Image 1 (cartoon, rainbow, N blue to C red):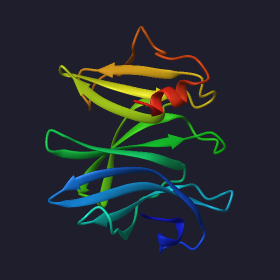
Image 2 (tube, rainbow, N blue to C red):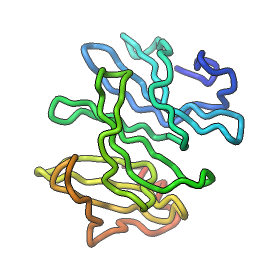
Image 3 (cartoon, rainbow, N blue to C red):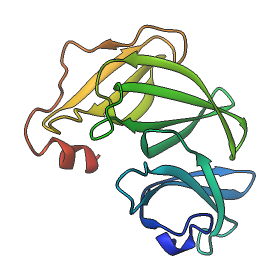
Length: 181
């Protein structure tokens, strides 16, 4: 489908990973991590588009921060597009946090709208809403030995609280358990 060689605006892309597809107006938009070979270059979120899901056109980098960005989970809630990339801080000396970006012009223009969890590792954030409550599954980034669960009454402007049953998995296989969902 798409390789590191397709990322045309950078020559030093080592690999692409963590694909997420969003369909809007009949077009499939593939958001993915583009990682560079240089040790001091942080991965970014890039975009490709397709009308048939088979042939993809690279569109460019859509999120580029100082920190490592990966796992660009993109979703639509109440008619608005959001993206919640993993803002990894291991190896980069940054402060762990969970970020929510809103599309100002989907799929290319994103604005950081909230940092609802700050100072906690929130690896590979996966959001879902059930019965009016938002839930956030994440991997403990330091150890990858547990899948944590937070919840909030709304996506934005709410206090995200760790669920009493969290972590929902604690074994070393937690990451593969999440991947089987």
